[in-house]
Image (cartoon, rainbow, N blue to C red; front, side):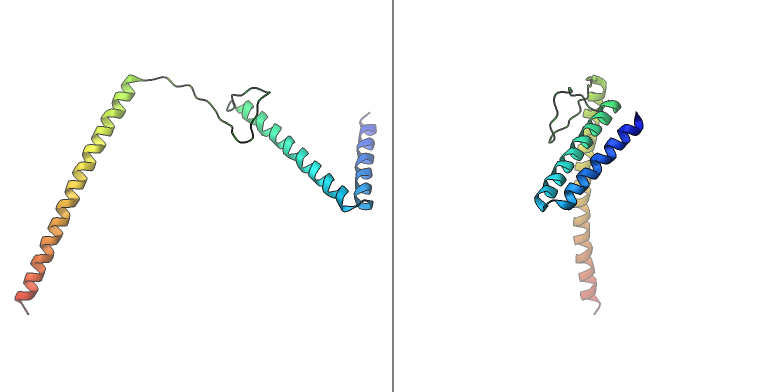
Length: 125
């Protein structure tokens, strides 16, 4: 049974190869296009099966869009965590304001130091 199937497959492949070798370029391009489309289809089905197997794909079998593959996560609101995030945001904004203030002071000190340096250079020629 397997030997017969193998022989049939080998004969089909040989017939295709003979057709390609003895045929024109149009037949070759059609064969290549069909083969390319078949490979894409197989790869797409394999990737879809892998995503479903891993539980990362939540779409039905009769829907597949090449351009968009999305996963959906269910999440629960946690008021304690939301309060923590708000507190962290406030702390970060406070730190940013202090940092801006320090930068402004540093620039003022830098300007004062430049002024002192220029006065000292003018004083001691």
